[in-house]
Image 1 (cartoon, one colour):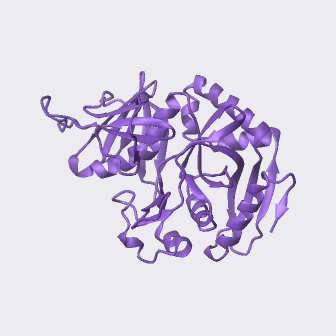
Image 2 (cartoon, rainbow, N blue to C red):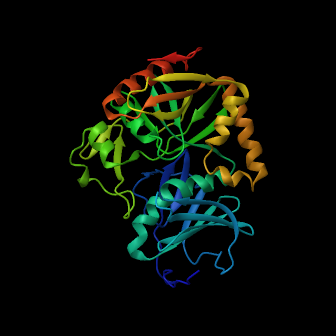
Image 3 (tube, rainbow, N blue to C red):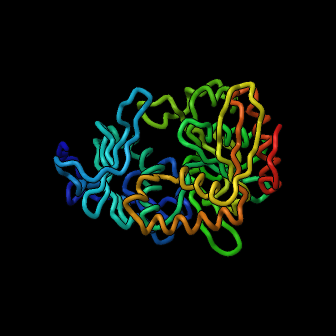
Length: 344
């Protein structure tokens, strides 16, 4: 790995910021505009710029790779001894402590916005997992005081369907990382950043923003844009967000199909529901290296399967029919996921 000498001088003042994410306070010297400011509280995660500790020509123990449609490497995660290295080629690196308490970031100044985007979603989600928190790869909205979760691999339309649900009166709780907490009388979904990452066709066809080019890019190399969602209408924002944990009322595993397909819901039970959650766990490869985290996750998933309806949602991948899909999700989700299979 190439050495960089871009750390701030030792005598330079470092300004830190407090942010709220997933019911956690994050202290960071890198501005994170995708996160909401926290008024105070003891940080559970500290982010600092500095020379990352996993600098070695030898590769570490592989955790996961993400590649684009052309096969290019987007990022790679490795374990080096007691730390994890999250590396973006030609962009920068994050070193994450094994207990998830600290993150070191290293990038050129011009690339700091891209590093902030990566940090505010997947990297913070990864660090909080190392602290023992459980996450699914999904989005969630709130309807009638309960969260409805949408889980699926990348590219299955989670954010697009969540945006359509906002158009039907739902409120955004989180996008892409669905963090859960068991306690009291319910499994609760935790609030993520008050924004959504959407492709231009979804912004135009679902949200109705023909001038999507005015929105900031999620990353400099992607056309995906950041749509801010707020509890109150404001310039450049869409109303409808929640900033507190909500009881999870239903969970849908998305299964997109052809434009002329029916909208169908199939309830999963027992082992089938449990395996669907495991398959859609966030950073699932990490759990193979961290048995303690796997045990915590499975305990929460067993509680979830017992108390929360989990269903497969087969739906047409069509902007022309997305409103009908959203209506069906609201109806089935509000009814507790439905006791039986359903079809629209």
